[in-house]
Amino acid sequence: MSLMENFKMALGSLKAHKMRSILTMLGIVIGVGAVIIVVAIGQGGEAMLKTQITGPGNTIEVFYQPSDEEIRANPNVFNKAPFTQEDIRALERIPEIKRVVASSSQFSSARLQDKVVDVSATGITKDYISLHELKVKKGRTFSASDFLGGRRVALASHKLQEELFKGKSPVGKVILVANHPVEIVGVLEKPQGLFAFGSMEVYLPFQTWRTIYGKSDYTQITLQAANPDKLQAAGKKAAKTLNTLHNTEKSYQVINMEEIAAGVGQVTKIMTLIIGSIAGISLFVGGIGVMNIMLVSVTERTREIGIRMALGATRNQVLTQFLIESVTLTLIGGILGIGLGWGIATLVSLFAGWPSLVSWQVVVIGVLFSMVIGVIFGILPANKASKLDPIESLRYE
Figure 1 (tube, rainbow, N blue to C red):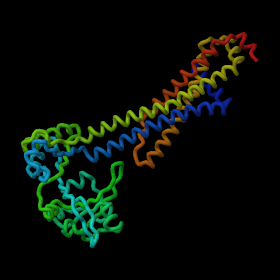
Figure 2 (figure 1 turned 90 degrees about the vertical axis):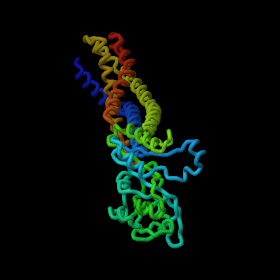
Figure 3 (figure 1 turned 180 degrees about the horizontal axis):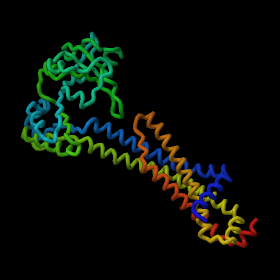
Figure 4 (figure 1 turned 135 degrees about the horizontal axis):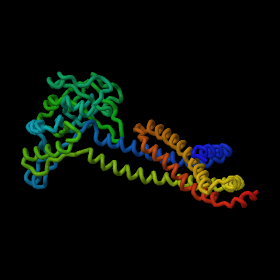
């Protein structure tokens, strides 16, 4: 009997006992679906975490942490801005670095009439807006003339609008930042994502910030590599350059957010593996259900087996027939489980706001695993059927 004929017989057997077949497949459907859901949501969550941590572009943050010797030599070292114009020019000469985006922040006060709130006032350049993807929800962003002329204009964060203006549009309104009047020309979109807590911020053109606070140095520097593959090299060269310029050893360092994201990815993979393994227990339970039903099927079809063997069917042919029935049962259940898992994972991703990564590898593994379950739990019933005595089988009532 050919493989196709065996497959047709297997489908006929399933159709003959529809309800029993459906209930048997249910365990496989739930098991495969649960594994697909866990893996898809886990991979989607990992991708979202990495995106949130690394931020836009292939960037590196540079930070300054003075050594104990520097602090003892100059207790006021933290009162001095860590980056100068000379530092910026030196970093821009490094071939691996595409852009150097500098900014300065100062904790200050913002006043509207008699209401005062604490804000972080940040002086930025034009590149800062594009690199950090500052998106304006109301009003406009800074123009080139705002940066060049040092106009008294500002961008307000979403939270500042809520706190200082009670949610009303502040566009065109004048507030006092560190007792200096500035006009709000735009409101930024509310931050999204896992790490989007929102903060009281006001952004100013750097020339305006320098006029208000009387400072010209920078407190933050973000580097964008010319090539993602050269991110590590760019960071090392930047730290070495700054330490050489300031005659320090390891005070200037870089934060490679991709390395942190990779570490987070390892944690999420382990968690996905653990939870996926727990979900896989339902596959084991479903496999036991398949074995029980196949044993019942062997008992019900004892006379049929006896007739086949009396007509010349070999033990291997009977074994193959029942194995194919078991694999067909679990394969159909696995395919339905993949569809169920894919659908639920997609719905979860839509509501949670992160990508659902159901890869073709996961689908293939799901199908193959279903077939393996069918083979493993179908061997015992198939073996029992193949060992039946033809004469005793024919006498079976």
